[in-house]
Image (cartoon, rainbow, N blue to C red; front, top):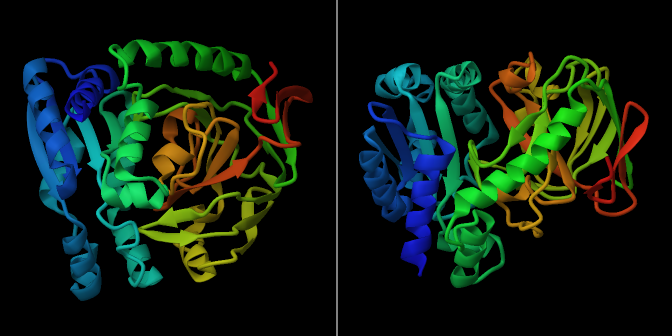
Length: 367
């Protein structure tokens, strides 16, 4: 059964999410533990007429680099990866962590330096994607570490992953199209709106969306997906938010995060655990203290925290925000080496008002 669901996921990534066409140069980037589905994706790309390039990543090698490499080596950009990012048509990324805490003992400064060095690759990918020149999708392959992080057995976690992607049914793409239609109604409603207020026990925040575009995230870039998102006007964010779940970066969890915003900037930041990492991330560059993304999660098939942002930011009844880089296609102008998502639960005593009208209450759309 798992083989069938795995092949469905591979075909979904190739034929629905990225719509690989004959002649496309397709990069398949995967962790070593994801090899079974990388083979399925490779076969699906060949079947679609594409030209696959395979890139393998490994946690042990990344740890060795961060521990032993010189500053020059950490700042080096692989020219083959740069060529691919500059020129390829499709990017399919599959993560399969073997140890979700593998970077716990790596210093925050080392992690910051590596992120900063790779920021040009990320910027190129996002800019090309915004122009429609680069189709991409990211997903997770079930692993023992992922299951442990989610407090599930491996078999339960496999069921969760494939169900969240609709790969436990015969036609996953049809289900994603249904979700896409629902989300598009919300995107259309928000198209000419200007102001958003969020109120609840974990949040008292306002921001402007004037001139910004909400995006319908329907499984074509993240798999699974289920969110609508935009880039708020950079200097418009005011108020505070206390994030409900830990935010994880490079295998380190930062919990109890609270941010206070004044004219767009997170002027005050604190955390109950790993506050040093929070502050190191926010100090990567000037753009790191501004919001690059505001989003509403719509996937009610994902109802529990798993420790993986790919799933957790889509939890139905939550909102999430990313400090740092914004997506150009939303109109965001925020530039940063950082893009770090943080989640706030809105399912109890919470509401969202749009231009003064109730839009969302206790995790459900009203408008």
